[in-house]
Image 1 (cartoon, rainbow, N blue to C red):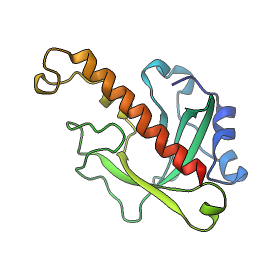
Image 2: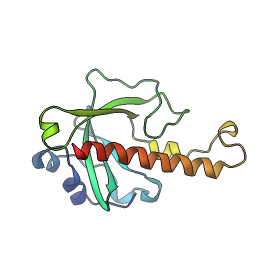
Image 3: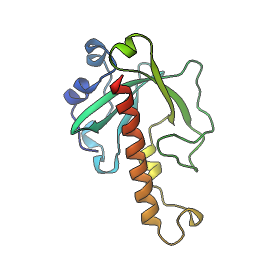
Image 4: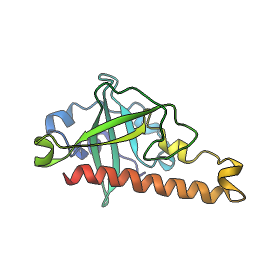
Length: 162
């Protein structure tokens, strides 16, 4: 993930109004993030626990989406659709994003199961077990990271296309 600034984040949101984007709560410690170990930037809104944000790079520009936890959603034991980590399965939530443009204004949404704390980048980089890796742990981690990048970008792109 390439670094982004507060201004870039506010301008990147595609599935909300300009006012909502301007009022979005920024993640804490943005300048100190280990950008080289992130595949996307995701955070929960501390003011509204049902709202979350994700920013990733698509076509050489940051694209952000606003997510909400599905009605009545709690964390559950499931596999995250983005990192597909089979070890960290106890803190996954269903998040829903309003589609961009007229589709979103008409109420169309897209949902997926994502790690509730957005720790997918960390999960993808965890050391594989012997059963998972065999003799080539680095190749397994590289495949996980590439898969995470592809799946998270595909979801954001689907939301952005409306």
